[in-house]
Image (cartoon, rainbow, N blue to C red; front, side, top):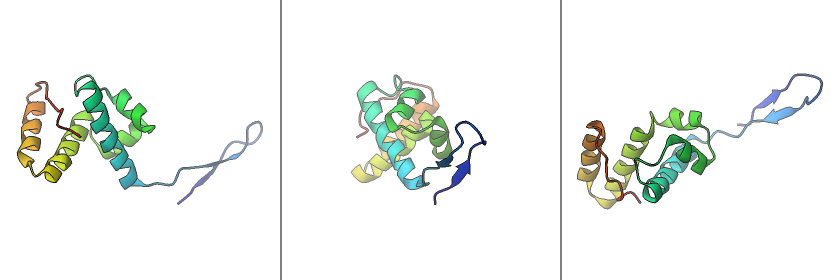
Length: 109
């Protein structure tokens, strides 16, 4: 669905076309970018700004789909663990994050 929003009249008056909403594609993009950035920089060194810049999305888009970096990391790891048939990895990661330790997430891929 495309939405047209009129700007104020006068200088710069125009019609802006909003991007079509594709929530699953946005969520997938965030998860894939998070995996790449966590591998490249490490979990602790990867900030929200890095994640947002890697996707070209806004922080609002990230927070619409995930509560923050920890939630994004856990969801990514859970999905990866299901594919690799190692659900214990995601469970261990969730415990480590909850205990505020430095999680080793180099298994994200």
